[in-house]
Picture 1 (tube, rainbow, N blue to C red):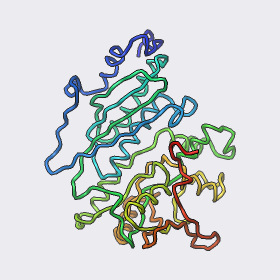
Picture 2: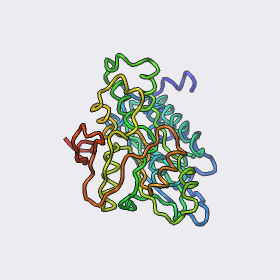
Picture 3: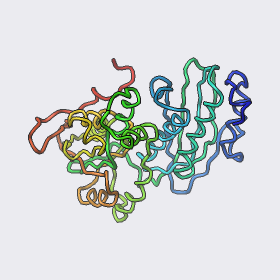
Picture 4: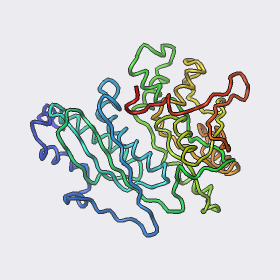
Length: 341
């Protein structure tokens, strides 16, 4: 952006002026009509998801630059596609903006989205909408495709399934706390502090694990896979899957993979709180037969783990195999819920 544009506000150029800038981020052969038309392969199902980020709720100028807000918005939606087993095809972007927002911030927002989208299947921005709003709001609709036999659903967990997580939990929440309270973690090294903050500002949707999963399941193509992402916390993901599938679960607290940065900073209870209820780690939580789960974890490598199993009781239990801590019932009450007090 040149010096003349960098000082402009959204109200200075209006909707059409802003659209002219943002259309540079979209494929010219797709945009320009009332809707985008994207071809899908035969034998594929279309998967559509929408995620909304609101200033002051999901991001703020204290914790998130324009580019980081764009990355996080794109990553949240790509993670939802990954949680369904889908390959991304494109996104549309709806923006609600106060007139006082700087044009440069909006362009940075799109730069961040593009950086994330290009890393994952070079996913295009194919359109969207802009409206005046008292609060900055980013609403993304993402769509992808999946082989119907490979669709991951929350309803498919079975008693005896192993519960697999694709990576560590708690890093994003810890990074947010370090941004909000810089006085925390004084004994962290600069590299450890930076790594945790980066986990919050630039979360990675786990689309990369899907080819590995399909390879493991190559001879079990009809095997239904249950799962979802852990964007609202590990506890939330397990409870949601159990409720949808009509089963329960036992989670072994010592098996939950935690960031190494926690080792000399947080107590075990604090680390567990971040992992179970912090959210925004965007890992996948999947339910697989035990033998396949072990093979999957071996292929994924460091960070992936089997954290528990599905049981025939309608509860989700956090258990300590060392028996130092009593069993604890996990529920949705302690995780983030919109409109809760």
